[in-house]
Length: 293
Image (cartoon, rainbow, N blue to C red):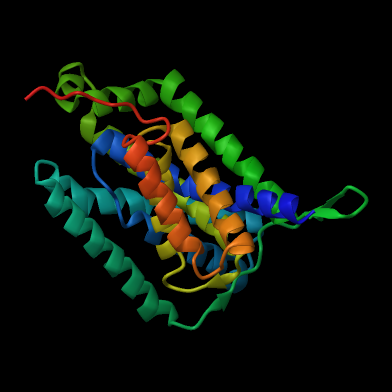
C-alpha cells in the first residue's frame, strides 16, 4: 500500500502545484512576463484565510472567499502599479521588478505577522476515505485538493476557449497590437489575467496551508518555485500543460522523498526538469514558435 499512498500524496501535492502554475502560465502566455511575486500572493492568501477564521471567527468557506477577494485586488494593484508602467520595458527590467515585489510582500508579512509559525486550521472538514479494507486511507484534504484542481483546470479551459474575455486573452497572447486594432482592451485583458491568477493563488495558498499547517512569511516561496518548474515542465502558456506538469512534479517529489532521499528530493525535481528541457525545450505540451526577424 506504500506505493499507492505515495502516488495519491504525490497527485495531491502536484494538484496544488498545478493550481499555482496556472497563474504563472496565464501571465506568461498573455503578458509575456514572469511574475515571480506570484508565490508570495499564495502566502498572502494563507494569512487572509488565517485572520478570517482565527481572528474574525468566519466560517471556512467565507474565509476562502475573503482570501480570493483580497488576493484578486492585490494582483490587480501589483499589475497596475509595478508592471503596467513597464509594458514596453526590457524583460530584465520587468524581472527585477517582479523580484522586488516578491521581497516587498515577504518583508511586509514579516513585519506584520512576525517570523514565528502560525498554526493554520484546515478549511476541509471531511472524513477520510478508507479503501481496501482500511489498508489505504485518503484524507479529506487530499480528496478536496485533487477535485478542486480538476474543476479549476476544466473551468479555466472552458473560460479561455468559450467566452469573449477568454478569446480576448488568446488574441492578446498572439499579438497585442493586432488585438488592440480589433477593439480588444489590452490593458483590461492583462489586468483580468492577473486577477484570475491571483485568485487561483489564494485557493492554492489555502489548500497548501490546510495540507501543511505551518504558516510563515515564506510559505509560498518554495512551492512557487516548484510551480514555476511545473509550468515550464508542462509547457508554459498551456493550461493542460500546467496541470500535467504540476502533477508530475508532485509525484516525482514524493517518490524521491520516499524511495531515494528526503534531502535530495528537490534536487531530483530540478534534475528531471533539466533532462526534459534538453529533450524537449518547449515542455511537454509547449509549442515551438518561429519568429521572423
